[in-house]
Image (tube, rainbow, N blue to C red; front, top):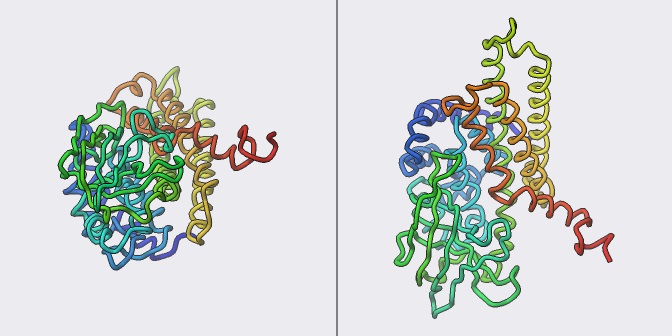
Length: 388
């Protein structure tokens, strides 16, 4: 069994926190196009939510990954996509590699305050010319004695305008593209770091997303996570948790929209009966609920294998792909059932429609997920079995 009474205790505490400290403010944060990350993360850190599966010696709870997955699923009850995504960056995107491979010194400096909520973290992988194609990034960190000198830029950086540090993937050598990169913890207050702009996005409005430039930014080599040249490998491992998190955070969000759509269509009348009484409506909602439950089963299976120490690249990739596709289909169908009200910004379904679209893009686009799966199946041209 994946979840126990201990999971349920933390789950109830998180549900209470979301109901009291987050959801009452979501509409305000959405209008402001930003939420107060430091204030919220400090509260969450004080309650232990930011380090459930992180090492005890750096302030974490030392629990297994199933607790992080449980938290990701509960964050889906937040009535927007931006705030959960920002929290997920802190817990499951910018810090897993640091927790797993970082030296004690760099973990004390960056991981411990991220767990306590004193630091806000962001992850710097994507660039204007290298989104899902991680191997082609151009940002470089040139060796200069005991330091790296960093030049380049990152794009679409969640938490970027508020972050205290960035987990930066940069080229630290001239070798093969999969073996010349390193992950480096870079303080955002370092000289030469410039937050160029906060991006104006279609959805995820309450989450600040930045374009960042690095102009001769000097950081000590001790800020590197693990071995030099292993950054691509570390990031691929980190992607497993990021993609599972992204899929799990969709579950309750999707169920919320189904429930809201049932309530709206039951009350709304057309041609002498409720919209919900039309077979095309209640059949479609039943089908969507079934799809959510099937996605949940896939995510739970992947989590069980991850806890057991297995490589879950295949299942995590499938879950990420399915979550993105389902989010697009489900919110589109539900919005249609809301009619004209679905096209207004005041309804939850329109926010979900905008926010859920990112799942098929961020953390690796659908097409990249399909390439990964085809490569593992041996059907990608030039990838192995079945090819000349």
